[in-house]
Length: 397
Image (tube, rainbow, N blue to C red; front, side):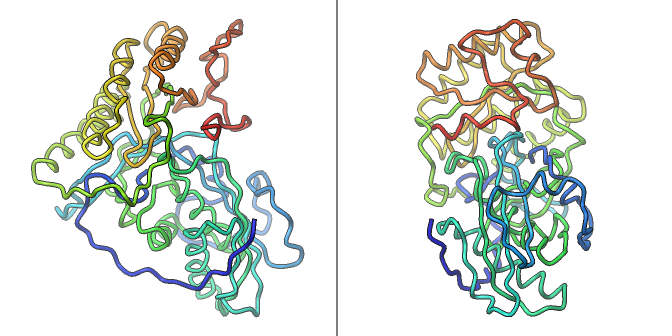
């Protein structure tokens, strides 16, 4: 991989009129490195922060240069996405993501004091949004530290599939922001990280937050509503639509929200708020399915009706999709009887219809015996939910 030199670039302000679908980066995942970058005000980094080494990327050491590391997770598309009203009654685009532990992006930034801020190299060279984020964060952190901006080298590693709607670009950007800040001995608050991420990629996912379900204005980098402490427990049988082909989010048509659309999205928002408050997986599935169906006005997945039919066949709570990608999921209530049988039935049904299954995971901590059972050794065994130590199956697509 050949590094590229990136000029300093600062993005302008964004218009606030939302599009119902087709925005650039639309998608909180349980953030295992939360101790590394906790929510709250911007703070100086403790020199011996516990757990930091576990989140450092597997990239070469930068020697004596001031060096920082950062991590960000991915997600599995959206539960709800559309146009909503903020606290002042203004319409803005918003989304609620479905968290998924496992794949993520790791960044290491080696700062070179005394060099021009334009002397910024990035490996791999095609991570242009991360390069923008590094340049913006250097300016921000140098100002806070009372130092002149300088160049450096950014290295990124990760295992998030690109183009499936799992937040790969936002994960790169957030990991980069955290690594640059770390090289200055700073931790930036989630609000600051979100602001820099939006400037770098025009729209971002709420991966900088602590995993709580939130309605997030992706084009403005702000939380519209905290829906509750946690999503209802779910088992998600992941798959891809459209043959798993990557989706160019910038090429998707933007449709301006009409008043009738906003009323429907506000209705779904209220139902999702109630589902989170009561732990109702069935009601959440109803919201996710309705949002996914509305998303088909832009995405037009040919397998969508088949996916919903499979969900009904196995007694699922509903389905969810990435509103700007190919990834999708069948949502199962773990409290319903016969969970393991329904998971295996779902996998077989997806396979029989030519829909590639990817990964089975949960929205809550569990053990691999939870889905598979201690005696299960079948060839159709789904991937267990304790996935952080396993390679993701999604990149094979």
